[in-house]
Amino acid sequence: MELSLTYLQFHLVFTLPVFVTLWYLAPAYDRVRRRRAATGLVILVTVAFAYTTPWGSHMIREGVWWYGDGAVLVRALEIPLGEYMFFAIQTLLVGMYLHWRGFDPTFEAGDFAPEPRLAGIVAGVVLSVGGLGLVALTDSALYLGGLLAWLGPVVALQWGVGGGYLARQPRAWLEAAVVPAVYLWVADRIAIEMGTWTISSTFTTGFAPLGLPVEEMLFFLAAGLMSATGLVLWEWVLDWNDRTGGLNALVRETIPPVAGRGTGE
Image (cartoon, rainbow, N blue to C red; front, top):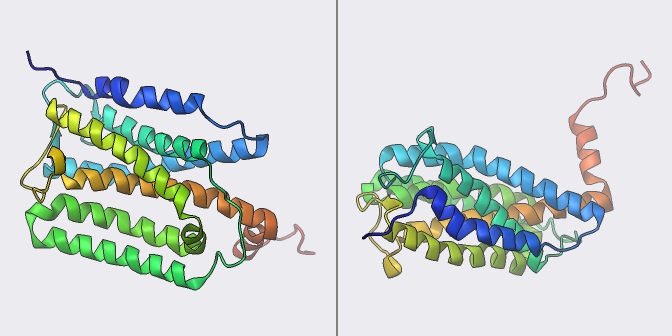
């Protein structure tokens, strides 16, 4: 008898136990750091839903991947409930692993150096343009090209803001992206083998180390990188504001004072 997993069963077996374990291992932060860490996770999960939903919905409609019979109970915008859960769970796994292993969000002089910021912006533009070019070139590059085009704007934005810091402190965010991704590669390979979802051979390159399409490997790695760098930058920006008041000054410059309040009118 062939074994199979529904999408929700997949989470019960592979993702939720890891989530509970990392929750249990969460570091004992002070009140301020705990509030900042929790806020960062909420923001990143919200962004993951907003940014990934249109892309994922488009890929499913195009037939880049689909789901086994009975694997999905509920859908919205073509996306199964289990996939929406994945948007949140992977972001939380990456974030909780990042906090468990620890990172230093301290702002230092030189973190706004232009060279790494410009390099990151250029890399993001190249990813976006190159990805769109691949999509236009051949059907077999739809998943890969769409993935690169999806990743590029985030790379450009994140590195444009804090490229100096990311280049100075790469170990934490790289590890937090790679380690959960490797685990999810294994889980993904099992889910594909059991028919929970299927990746199209028409819209992928056909390169599949150990049976896992390289596009799937890059997806988990890319999503992890965006989450990890987003979280370290969140706390780094707050530390920068603590030390320099930079955010407060930016708000004052951006939002004009209301007449009659502090304007002498």
